[in-house]
Image 1 (spheres, rainbow, N blue to C red):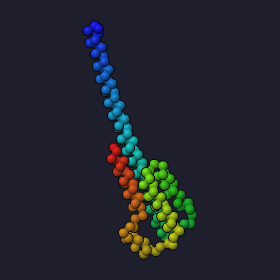
Image 2: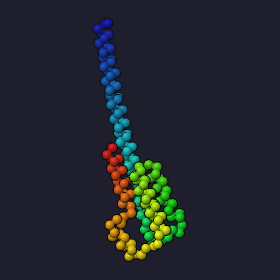
Image 3: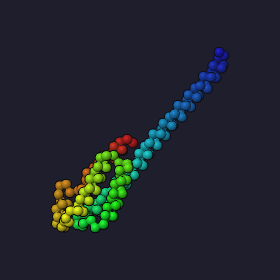
Image 4: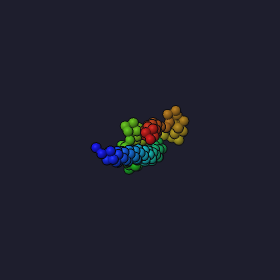
Amino acid sequence: MDPTLMGAMSGVLGSVVGASATIATAWLTQKTLSKREQTRIDIRKREALYGEFINECSRLLMDALTHQLESPEKLLPAYAVLNRIRLCAPGAVLAEAENVTRRITDQYFSPNISTEEIRALARAQDADPLKSFGEACRTELESMHARI
C-alpha cells in the first residue's frame, strides 16, 4: 500500500474516532442530565401531590371529630387525590394514604368528641394521624433525591 495513502487514511480514521468519542460523550452527558432533570420534576410533582393530600385530609380529620358524615361528597377531594397517589406512588406511601382515608371515614361514623377530648387527643403520644403517611413520603422522596 502507498505510504501517503496510508497516512491520509490514518488521519481520516483518527478524526472519525475522535469525533465519535466527542459525540458519544455529549450524548451520554445529555442523557444523564435529562434523567436528573426528570427526577427533579417527578420529586416536585410528588411533593405537591402529597402536600395536597395532607391538606385535604387534615381538614377532613378535624371535621370528622366533631361532625357526622352528612354528605358523602365531602370525601370526594380526598379520594380523588388518593387515586392520583395510586398512579405514581410506591406501595408503602399508598398503603399509608389508604390508612388515613379509612381513619377519616371511620371517624365520621364514630360519635363526635368534645373540645376537651380533642385537647387530650392532641396531647397524646401518637396524636398525629398523618405522621405515618408523612414518614413514608419522606422516605420515598429521600430515595428519589439519592438517585440524582
